[in-house]
Image 1 (spheres, rainbow, N blue to C red):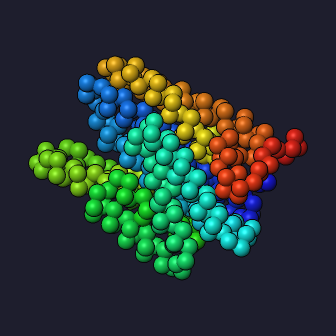
Image 2: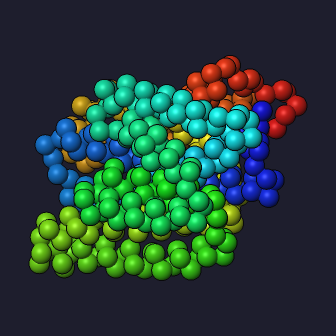
Image 3: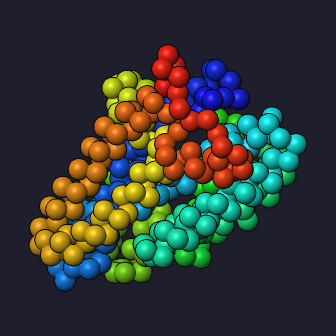
Length: 325
């Protein structure tokens, strides 16, 4: 069973590129998650390091993940409609399982988002499958603006889910990636500079609270397009990141007990260098373990369990020796 089954062959290379972007986002999320736990338990505010993570990394990777989640939802729904006459029931089972896993995960790691992903997929994305494709971008923009208006944070995700779904339905030409990246990078850098320094000093917390989600979203767009452009031109980067992205569910969940157990040690470090060391070590493990596993199996361990729960049957996972990943 091929992960790209039911997807036109012309789109397969694009799927690998999106896997690489997902792998990049997972690496960033891993670093930010570890830093948040360490800084939340620490009495220290480390000059230079904490502001850098807060203003350059925090909030930049979850939007990428949410957008890609919407794309994956649309591709899975398209595949499910070919396999079963009741694809929405399959979707409800799939995301009910995700919400259940997310609920357990949130018990040990309060504030994590998998439970919200599962619930939002059921409440927002499944009903959105009844919308005409041309309505999805408007629904996505409307939901995103509503999230920005009310509280940002996780409330941005329904809009990003819908925009990802719209992207999967009508993907733009890749030739737009470079000019949008250049404009996004310039705007993101300008807003970051202004909000972090001059205007923050003048208007204080109000300006920061209003503009920070917008700056974070622009940063997410810039990072996502930058890595997308890079993996299209440097295949070695794609070979490192794409397997990580294909096993993102497994890595995201299994990293949690590691950094939770080490949080007291990380919080006691007055330099925060242990945060970067642990994140770097986990990322290396992701990059080594993922291709090793995927040479032997179609899906990551937890991706396979999730797929079995989705279809309510045991899905063959072991690759024949002669089959390439």
